[in-house]
Picture 1: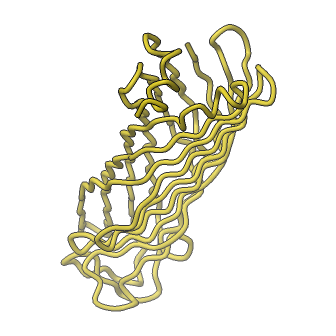
Picture 2 (picture 1 turned 30 degrees about the horizontal axis):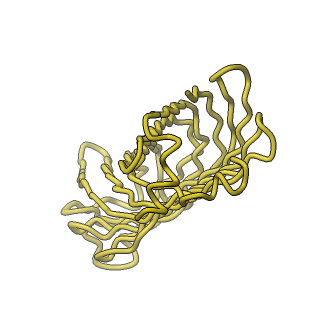
Length: 245
């Protein structure tokens, strides 16, 4: 405990803030079903739903707290995919049977919100002259999921909200003052639900507190809850601008 406290003494009265907003180019893949009774009721993103890539907003905020208080990491990444699809055979979605001979419209919403609490490894920044930092903590992921299928006047829709605890690991390496390489991982498998995110980011200091960053994000969402079964991957590059104080 003494070593831990000593590591944080230089920042005992300091509170740091980092905020960023940007766009994420989301490429979906996987499948989804609702009350499926057989393989024919599973809808493929590529073959049946025929979703395209989408550009969506993302935002995050980090608060470095003083002394023994955990640091806070907030993040939001909404996703929405929709389009006109077709399936060769009749299929059931929920309590409704849809004809395979008629095109249908569908929409999948995945709104992901993260609330994380973490600590940096004591003395690591000091030992590396502020070049390397590793964070360890917990994350709570809130997933709002909505699935809809509509065809010729009939419609079936279901929505669920999941709260999933996750492990959080983060690392930042700054070889020079104006350049940093960052990596983040969040994930846990619990109760048949498997969700994890991997993020890599390169950040460049522009002027003062202003920075620009670009990277790649990979999300795996494998959910089986309330008869909704989704095995979904969202991945793609992103860019953001932000302020760090």
